[in-house]
Length: 509
Ligand SMILES: Nc1ncnc2c1ncn2[C@@H]1O[C@H](COP(=O)(O)OP(=O)(O)OP(=O)(O)O)[C@@H](O)[C@H]1O
Ligand SMILES: [Mg+2]
Image 1 (cartoon, rainbow, N blue to C red):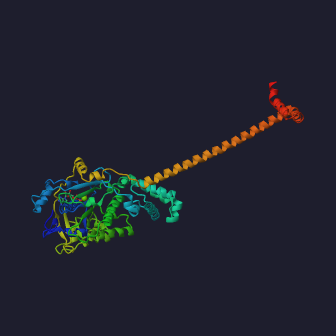
Image 2 (cartoon, protein in one colour; image 1 turned 180 degrees about the vertical axis):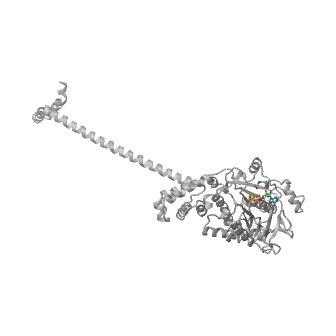
Image 3 (tube, rainbow, N blue to C red; image 1 turned 135 degrees about the horizontal axis):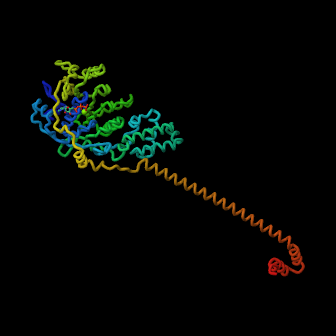
């Protein structure tokens, strides 16, 4: 819900907690134990941003956000809360929602290309060691240099097969490529495929302008990514979110501090983003989060334990909403104390004590004021949402998906000519050439053999002829000799006739 300053989130006994739109790019944190109200708070912020004409992207890990598309009924909890806040009657409202789903069941397919995700995120996603990561980046470089597009996993697999096949030559130029590394990457890729990677990687890839567009009625569109199944593949889930972050960071122009952000992202189960990120990658992520501010993007992280978020990132989260935490174990007590320390203290109460006693839908809130200074922490009752807390039924959701203006653009996979096709064609060509050469060789050999046989035959025939002649000579040598002498004695003409006669006429006799 909006008031004249911004998004009205909650109310303390003293004042309203209002998120100023010009401070939304200073990021935020929504923390609290399970069932304490994080998702409803998230929804409330999303509603507010939408009303301000700011598009929002939400990762829906529990699958409980679809009701944003429908006006809230007056459920008892909601009306009771509205009454307590003096908001009776609360005006229900529905919001423009686009549903996305990597698995292509409950939303518009959300895809990215392999090349766009890039070797660094992919290496983390596939949990590669340094050597394997090196081989992967060589494959990317070669694809780049040759203009072979790496779009889907088939492209990457074929590319790696090419690298393995041409290893000798590639090693001279790019460095070591061991077949075992290639094999390890290929195996990981197969696993990734089983986890839905095959659906995520490809074209048409999500276009940022589709996230940034405002709805016709001037409201910001609320993009909900179904992350129920996705979050069970934490590396795929976090890769997707980190890819989106870097995509926004790389492509949006520098705009400094705007009166309101261009886009706000909500990352639920935020700790998943940071698991398995080593020093270098974490540093890059931290930097992107810091710098994306001046590109007009705000990020809100939701998590159960605020300590799951690395300090360098947590330090950049200016707007803080802390729901209840439990404090039974020493570890939990440390978490409570750390959470309390991150707030600007309110002399009226002990933050640490209050954190463990908050009711559902109650929170400790400290937001940045117009000067960017955190307000003193207040214990607030969070407002009820205007949209429905109930889920859309699957049919209703599907109707919205199909009617979505973005549906046609992303519904079908397209498979343009990319590395897989090019390399496969090259391999086929090479195979055809090899087959032809082999055929020619066989043909040549056959010809040689035929020629050899023909020579033998000829020689044999000559030999037979010679033998026959010798035989004849033995039998009729006297005749020949005689004819020879006859030639000399009787003359050429007669001799010839005689000889001829001896050779032919004799038979006739
Ligand atoms: N501001 C609120 N207005 C009305 N009801 C609320 C509010 N906050 C919480 N509730 C009620 O409490 C329930 C639990 O809240 P919510 O789903 O936000 O918890 P959560 O912290 O997201 O839990 P989880 O960690 O399990 O996701 C909601 O379904 C709703 O009924
Ligand atoms: Mg939740």
